[in-house]
Length: 119
Image 1 (tube, rainbow, N blue to C red):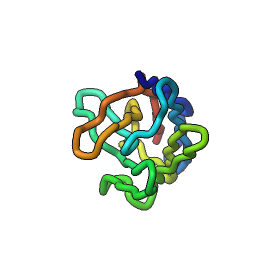
Image 2 (tube, rainbow, N blue to C red):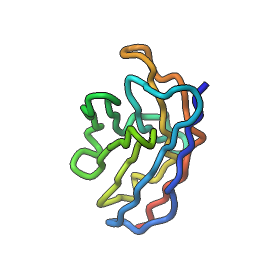
Image 3 (spheres, rainbow, N blue to C red):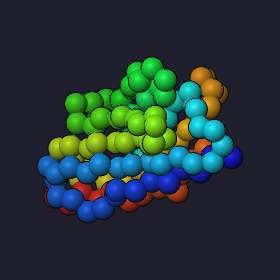
Image 4 (tube, rainbow, N blue to C red):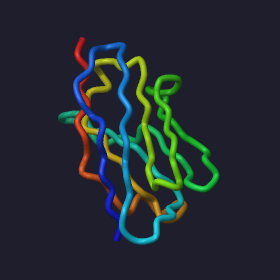
């Protein structure tokens, strides 16, 4: 079993920055990839970005390219989401997730952290 705990959410003005963290604990941790998702009220949960755990390759949704950066610290079993130039439309609950195997979806999810961007 893997536990994922997000932190770092909060209220920020448009144009500001936040860094989310997701710490993993539990079984020996070595996922294929870690992802960040977000869900705004009344909308579906969408992927924001992801990182391959061993190689470090990243993926970003078009809406956040150039503004958000996913990184990881393998030694700390932690993945980060650096969010810059935040916009009101970035307001959502942000979740991290772990995919144990390539192409098999995400197996574990965190509880989510609220990010609110004021205009």
